[in-house]
Length: 231
Image (tube, rainbow, N blue to C red; front, top):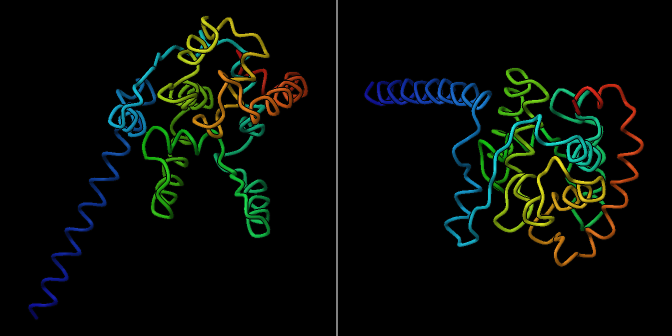
């Protein structure tokens, strides 16, 4: 009888923790729908480890169309159309990873926002499960423009550099709105691994990747759904 009572109390406590956690997460998701996060776990880790924190949040309308197009071209070309998950890319990545030693990711911009804003880097299946939850929630509660705006503000673009405005100032000494297509493509090419893929000095990966992104930008810019997000 004592064991049953103990299990019941533990069960009720666990349910309360889950319920309170859910409510707090929804409140913070709604908070971030209108207000940028004061700091993220990744940014805090950057400060603690001595990499510093260069960050400059800006509004969506002040970002310019070139960086928006470059990031969608390089990171998630189906961003306007999917519901947070690109299942075809996931299947391709799984098939590739089974046959190759090099790992290929399939995270959408929405998934990366879920990770960068609410969670932490790395972390295995537990973090991935939370990432699925937060991705689903922001797709339901935020607009596509807000998701893209958040990504462009919090994504790491270099050692200790977060957001495209900070990247534009650091690499090119100009505002994000003034980036040329080539400059925007260079910043977008850093995103898969902003510590190793550098602009100054230009890494081999960036030198190879940014011309490809430029070509994809030309292919995508006439798409009506893409154009709607560039405004």
